[in-house]
Image (cartoon, rainbow, N blue to C red; front, top):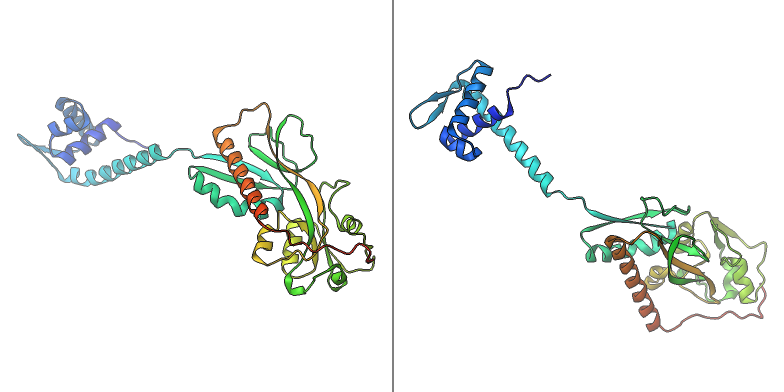
Length: 314
């Protein structure tokens, strides 16, 4: 256990040593010179040492005082610096958004820079998971979910309906359904399957084609991995055009032919009976702006989809 003298006595000594005067130390600490004198006398009694040589208009540190002063000066400087940092440190506002792993990686992450530019004072936390998260927990502020709904107890705002089409690395030279035999079909597992989930079987039905059961297949448990495999030229994938928009724009993937298969809708979800905080409102407004920008871009681009020939059997 520390055997220390009263802090007030240490403060009085440090001020007097720094100022070279009991009177100036009293002004510095907003007390009387008598109080300073009493505190230092108390410290000297505690240590059994004389710390100052008293003169008429000044005080001079003794050898013992010279040894003690630097230690206290550095200590009080450290206290002041730490307290100053604490006063300046404010708990930053934050908002947490949960979405599927693929949506987080391919749609949200590329847009984070714009959120940071708009709201440098808000920390954005992205929770990527294919499991359904309980929004009533305080850990999550907003969810983005793909599906039909309904979402009881939640406030749901439609973002956009997804669309799926065959995409492929342009280096494979796939240009029409006639080329489907030239590369494996890439599949991924739907974690919450729906009767209208866009699958290769659904696409072949929409195209009026018959898929060969003997055709080479490549299967993944995660949609993000299927995207990476397609970009790497490992096969032809039926993928969300929303999630591969950057790859299509950069030419890393191409959409050589149709038809396009309609998917379900992405929605923003918040707890209905919980008022949206300013940071959640900021996140919702940011997402709305991103969606509006995508719609504007899409409306300015001419359609360049090559249609399949329904009479052709596969």
